[in-house]
Image (tube, rainbow, N blue to C red; front, side, top):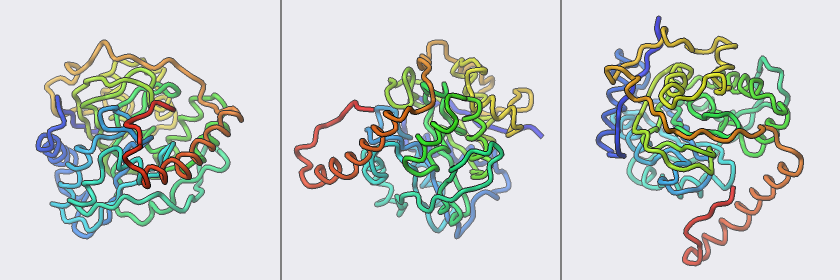
Length: 331
């Protein structure tokens, strides 16, 4: 059976339009209405890499999150939790900067940090690989990545986004353990994705990030949203839309090698546009490639930055909000 994905051209973050896209996607992907039901606990996993305003395109846009919350509320789920493990800063501060505060007030969604790092069997034999054990508390997980170029893995989308379920500074340690083997890193991502098994992935590509992503790139008006239950199929089609050479999308190559999801276009059914190739862009700037490994000095700097961000900067901003600068560019 072919993997189905749903695409739609959307030029702006209109809440009504994005909400309709989510509803249309569920009709296409879940015609029997079996994914969500009354009383379920649902975890929403956006991309919350670092605390920036939505227009910087670092994080999943709050309108996308709100649209999903609206639909889930209509489906009578009992609990919505939003969580991720930012690279820098606390989840509360990063989510607030990203514009998620209204989701708590309007929909009762809780923004809670990931807890209980728990090992799981991985076929790559990578030591110290642990993800949040609290995932077991939820009936469904919805993956909500941002479309971004990535200076280490070329593109970050559905598969790569789930690396955020590794808590805190375990992430750079895992980078070190795989050295600069990008395919091995991709295979580790597949092990994580296979273990987590989100029931649905909804891609925020209305405003994407090009260039030196996932943090230091620039906005790109892609104007496309996508959804699917098969992350590999979804990532595969977006690689085509962005005109990125497949041999450089290491997470996809790992998925192909590990037979995870549907890699081949002839086995992917795309609904929405008459021909999804009409969405292909020619001027999306890819990232200049960098090594994925962290040397000891870079690893220590990462730890100190996080200590400063959470232990000093965030408390001082809470005490003296008027003296806080409007933005910053540090990585």
